[in-house]
Image (cartoon, rainbow, N blue to C red; front, side, top):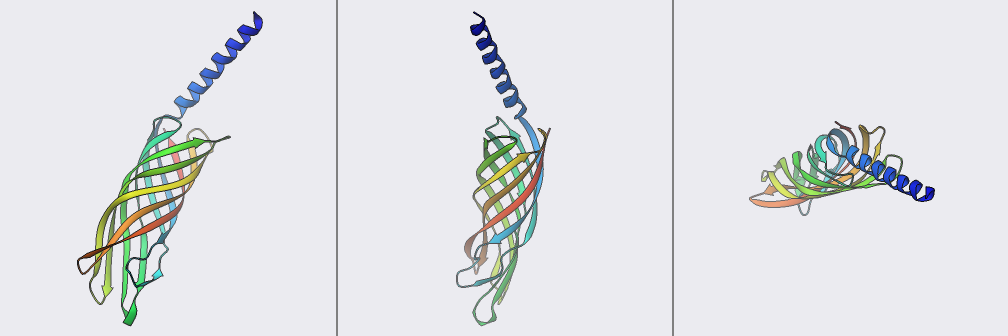
Length: 191
């Protein structure tokens, strides 16, 4: 009789602990990150002379369970330069990238977790060229990323991640799509 009682108490305690952990994982969070970009080739037949830049971003999310969240974000995409034949060149910046992601989290142990993200973003690019003809453009496209998170406390965590965004420039009326990858380090605060 005592063994059954102890087993029952153990099951109830474990269920209560799991429920408390799941409830602690729910709620709003906000954060900021800084990262390094890698811009893909913006036009066919050109060589990228500057494809990396330092950028920053912010995000706001809601953690529905310990396994998934919905996150809105804004980030910069960085400056770039490209050179073509005969002295032609283009300069630009992917400046405003904003969107919405579903974030799936795999909790590991001792505050560590892995995450994957999938969503949709809009990127605004400004550009100019010599000779004239390359201009900025907007592009809306799917976005995705992977990363790891370490929670120092239940309210504060750090992220290391990689994200991929779609961007575009126009060349004499034709749109040329390219991708921007960003490695970032961020901090988040739950409230």
